[in-house]
Amino acid sequence: EVQLLESGGDLVQPGGSLRLSCAGSGFTFSSSAMGWVRRAPGKGLEWVSAISGGDRDTYHADSVKGRFTISRDNSKNTLYLQMSSLRVEDTAIYYCAKMEGFWGGKGWFDPWGQGTLVTVSS
Amino acid sequence: DIVMTQSPDSLAVSLGERATINCKSSQSLLFRSNNMNYLAWYQQKPGQPPKLLIHWASTRESGVPDRFSGSGSGTDFTLTISSLQAEDVAVYYCQQYYDPPSTFGQGTRLEIK
Image (cartoon, rainbow over all chains, first blue to last red):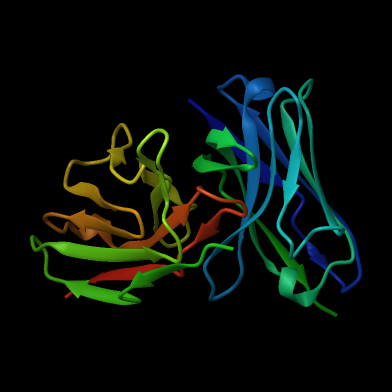
């Protein structure tokens, strides 16, 4: 069974940094494209970042470009999202997800982890 | 960016009745070379992560009840639940993966009448 478990969510002040992790199991992590999607309070889903499997191409939404960095450690079956210069509007539940049909940074998301809450507030 | 617009924003349907959710994209999601529509549907229940229901606009995932079906092509798509069950109460999202960045509709909240 494919499982994804996020961690690292926390309360952080504006301008601060945070690193989210997502541990994968039950599938060949190293060859799987992965992504982060967030849901802000009272809002819908927003794609944040994606990373390819073997060649590790990375993609970021314009709203986080230059502030967030997606990466992976295939030896640990773990996906990361390094978040810096955090803003109040980055407050959201962050989900990691395995991506299918992946090409050029896009595809569908299946399955999803349970999510981790990031709150940016002073 | 491709804008995805769902209608209605919320919907109340009686148990056993049909529920229909629409999704319109600002540009065609049909890739001519493979004749595939680059659209997915998700269900999100309270306190749970989204669950993939359908990809390629009409391909239902394994384990998804056959009362869920997806249709449409180009810019207009529909998710239909043929006979609403209590466990179908959720927010439903469409997502395009035709052009980066991938974008979602605003969501449709489905409730029991």
